[in-house]
Length: 104
Image (cartoon, rainbow, N blue to C red; front, top):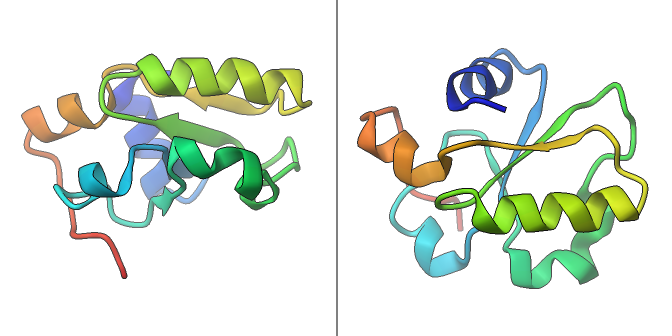
């Protein structure tokens, strides 16, 4: 999914944005309202990902490498409503889009 569409869907509340970067990356700033779920914790926290196909889930990492790999793993587990965001948070930051410090 394009970064523009992902941002619009997330900000409109039509999709859940999950930032799968690691905590040290989150410290550089995250999209407001994104759920932080580091890729390394995904296997033990997979229950936090909505299973309702009516609730789209958008995965974002730094560039899209990890999110595309995570997408494949989640699709194998029966999550057809998950997409990954092209460009990732590095492109989000490059565009100067709003970012906040993560909640502790």
